[in-house]
Image 1 (cartoon, rainbow, N blue to C red):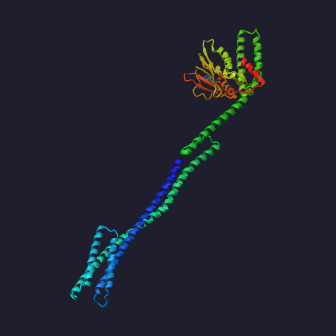
Image 2 (cartoon, helix red, strand yellow; image 1 turned 45 degrees about the vertical axis):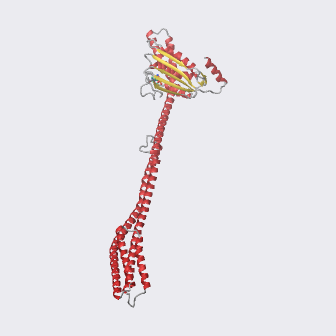
Length: 493
Ligand code: ADP
């Protein structure tokens, strides 16, 4: 948009400069034309002036030897004036042909002057004097005829030139008038186009804001460019993240309701279930029962225990106990859980899972609930075993990242991996792909890790299997007496 504003300003300036330049040039050209016209008229006046002077001298010549004759002094003045006017004609610059005609005229005037002087000065008898006078008179008449000719010719040409210059000046006036009217119109038109583009972008943004405010979180702005395009992109990104947060909030609300419901249900089921379990256990102790019934009883007891675990998980998820913080060694907690898992790593059916551990050194103890961390680790380790029904390798790695002050725990397996497209769903409660799964293990694990200020991520390994990464910040709290006791227990256990 900044570029467009600059282009717009440039256009406005260009229109002003072009209009101004055209006006200045036109005015200058008109003045030059009018100057030429004035000069031509001055030349015309000069010619007529010369004609009058020649006629005056002719008059002096005609009146010679009459009682109206003027004195010799007057004649000299008149001839001098005539010659002066003729000389003035040479002052201006002329074209070659005009110059030639002027030279002819001047030599004729020179001839006229010498003829006049002879007519007045020769004293060789009346006859000769009259002859000289007539001769001079004839030269004068010739000059008058020439001048008349020139004046008639030049008058018509001057008239044509005057008309042409009049027309040209009138055209310039019209063009300037049109320019004067068009220029503001053009500038206004451009201003309207620019303003419209500008305001239409703002309108789109305002409309989008109104839509999102009214709850239409799917509304996106399209087709805006430049800086407005950047603002629109940010707006769209904001709308997307608001929508994501809204969805997340809705899901959390649903989970919370579901959790409450499940917790209520679990609570109601727990007591009758305990009764059934106790009854079954008493019955199974009765050795008089036939073997077939004993097997059935064991099956029922197994299923009751499964329901019991599910109820425990449900309650754990719905009402997670607050973490009891003690200084905890992550490696020690992991070792303890690995020893439990190792029992299941080798099954009777021959499957074998190799356990590889790489527990980093120098990991500082952190304030955490050791039981909750053990539960989280166990869930992940058991899941890894579940993912490798035909055996494989279970790798556990812990390390400490000093700059960020966090502990990294990676649990990976060489199993079947997370089903494609399910990476985002496996942490949701009740999501399971297992026939006898509850879908609560990872949801509980995530909650436990987050309760400790950490994060958990899952991804498939490029070579097969899945990896779960836990990032836990090392928390060092001021120690209370009770905590110190717990710490000692944890460190020495
Ligand atoms: P459950 O074990 O009862 O299914 P979880 O919340 O522990 O519940 O796991 C949810 C789902 O995540 C599992 O059903 C499985 O599809 C997937 N999952 C968990 N761990 C792994 C793993 N190591 N490899 C592949 N998929 C896994």
